[in-house]
Length: 433
Image (cartoon, rainbow, N blue to C red):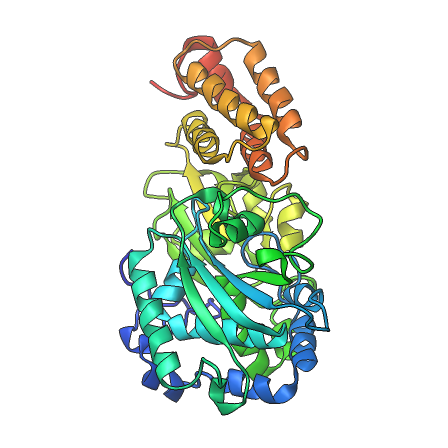
């Protein structure tokens, strides 16, 4: 991606304030703009007070799960009988999502400061930033920022001169989608195959090397300094529709849209306004047909449903989809929905760790059936078979990779069945000449 678009008047620019400004990467510039004041404040507050402030803010995990971050931090044992660890999930493998790499690319010190505050709060002396291996520029920028922070004494055995050890290490992944799942990520850091673990035990009880561990997304951690500086109550006030969904959210918009890019808005912002007012609407001469608001792993919604969707956790659930990571994929009337769904299924089949039978076999057969359908060799019973496969793949595996595949496929058939039936009938997509 090149430089992001100029901010729109209706955006709430918080995390994205310095996107596109290379100067923001430099420690001296970042400090002049208020950087590391939140860490200094947090180190003087006490660990429990930091956790309570984050709880008050109501911020929920921005990686897709939407679990309250402060509550997650509070699960860590109060008595430190063994090492505690922090993991920053910067793997960002969800198709349609490209926000975290931009945070790291333009504002690396925001990530570092958020990690340092979280590490202090949960009594972790060591933290790992697990970055997707293909993110060569963000890794280079982040490592340079880390080196600056160590040279300045912000990190290390005497962080900020306050007698607290905080060490952060970049761990480069190898491009496995499954390692975005928190327990697979921990296995990867440990040098094991990136397979998800059975839970319980949960990471706060037994995470990295069997020790208490907290895993947070890049966007979540980058918001923490703002919460500490301006207060949890201030952050909680950033909500347009629901007190359970607070703060700002970065949405990565891609696909059939006039102005793709990252947009930051307050939680509860209307989806139609984001698509038409900020992102310019469909391409010239085209009409919106479908949206996946939270990345490839969430159910499709129609253009009509998009008109009444509010962009927060509850607003997306109200129309049968999920906010997810905020990686928004847009489809117009020139899009072959069946082909795109096949591509998603093929992706999930390829990225399955193959640990669970329902996922290994279900994703593979889903992709094969859709490929057969696209070749004009489908049977009428294939659509029912895809629903049956989806049922067997949902809620029956260690992680939710197979659920994600099933959600995309079954929702597409439910919402756009004529497109699938056109291939059954005459081997071509609906409306094709």
